[in-house]
Image (cartoon, rainbow, N blue to C red):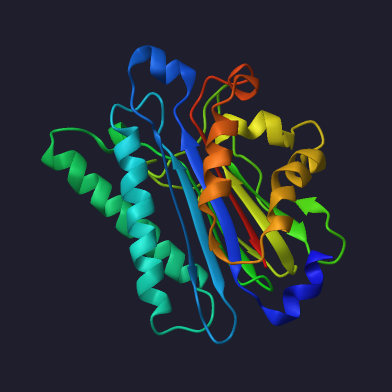
Length: 262
């Protein structure tokens, strides 16, 4: 069982891909999703950091907002782990999100725009396998595999807005919908994805992940023993996300990060 290796705190292996939705191809719109995934090697256990940001379709520069968000969080996390052993605190994440907001507000002002023009969501996971944190704004989701029984669970559910097909964004005036969830359940795998594949991966009626979907997604990892980014799996994942099977069920951008302890 995958959980048997938790005590070794082995390396993380991951695959990641993002593809433009068919609706954006028809309108000539750029890919609005941005993502980043990396591993920090510490003597107390390797830490996986993964994030996906989805620029709002109604925002003219939503894709740029998503890129600013991922780039800034990545830089801050790498800087933090240069000296720190423990996972970042809630206060750390709040400060970093404020920094992202400041950068977006400056970018908007310099271009004669409003912050809402850069609206983007966020799903970010930081985990050493024994402890994890989910930083969540808006929709999209992160799903974990419990090390004790291989079941799948979502610590933070996609957040729908006041009206149909709406959600919350990092540029919201008061940002009251920032969620920072601490997870103390040991895990062996994590999946992070944008709202483009929510309906494929989640059961919204019972608010649980589709176990069959994630079991299938992670099956190829059993053939690989090495950690780090797996280029072959990432390429296969991109092809899958851009397949007719997936495009027939959603026309939105689709991003997915899969990570497992090896």
